[in-house]
Length: 201
Length: 201
DNA sequence: TTCATACTGATACCTGGTGCCAAAAAAAGC
DNA sequence: GCTTTTTTTGGCACCAGGTATCAGTATGAA
Image 1 (cartoon, each protein chain N blue to C red):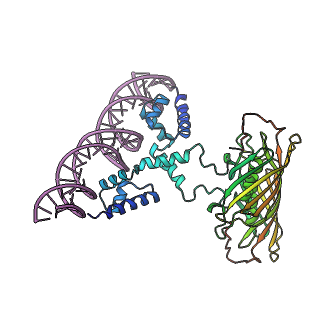
Image 2 (image 1 turned 90 degrees about the vertical axis):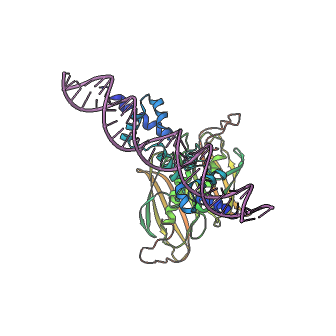
Image 3 (image 1 turned 180 degrees about the vertical axis):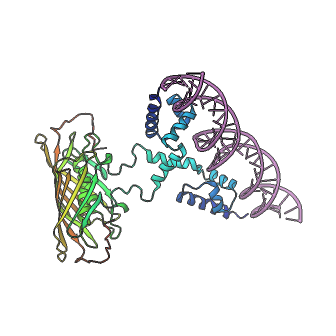
């Protein structure tokens, strides 16, 4: 029994649907040259849901509460956070962050990581960037993982302003350095119970 | 004739479907207490597509090749650009750019507009932000339209660096000001024919 | 009363399927 | 060769969630 054709077809089927989830069974018959029943048996075996279910799943994913809020929250994953002291976040440079020609990250992404970390590290209800002095030491490139470290230099809980210094590294090379001045709404609220302010998602 | 109910129902219908696009007509009959035919007439009048079309549209949107590349290209719409001289861009503060609690834009969005304009205004093959000195004068808020104006202060075509000053306004109020130093790859290439470098999308 | 608008019901039809059964075809085993 | 098993195909009933169309009813205004 020529077993391969079936497996090959299964592979092709999976690939086709992955590439284009909008294909109906009828269209797949054209592409794979088998009857529509075979397509359906194949989907059954591979547990690929029908077109409508696929679309529904995609719609649900994109409708998700955490939907497509790309720059909404903190940029990068927070690895460590000691409020009013220091914080560390990780941000991987991906395709969408770089100049396509050079593969070098656009400055505002590197800045965004540093800025959102600087705001997140401030233990206050509302914290806003007032000013910043920044330097891009060397370009960050596609695929590189940027580790940003933020240090609160003068918390100024009463004063309404805090100074935060951020250094971003790729490996042990520094790529970015910034001095941020952050407005804070009031004295540290210090609500107990680990209540977080909105910047920490 | 009690006309209001219909308009109210139309409003409710729109709202319901906007809130939850996964509602079938049958479920809507329960919510609005009218027959399924009425629901369908209403959808027709309001030109709200059927459930499956809605899901398909959502799926397509999320599957789009240009999907969710939020910070990919220049942030904001370029309104005017005079290479190596000046540029103007417009950026509207939307839901996804603000702190949900306060409705104030996160700093890195405002910065991103200014930064990408500063890079775009440089007439060179490769232009990268080297350093910047920025100030957030007053918060930008949800719905506000930010106009950024960039001026090349010292083009330094030969020197490999350019200074660009950017001012961002909402109406006639300044919200942001930044001094950028931009690395440029070489002397102005000045390729004729309006060839654009990659930052100008 | 008459008329217009709004609503409801009923029916035929469509797409893109599922589920099931049987027949045909192909491959494998002997 | 023939038999058995697997694979493929065809056919039919059925479903959800609609569209399209026609007819009937309610309701209120002129």
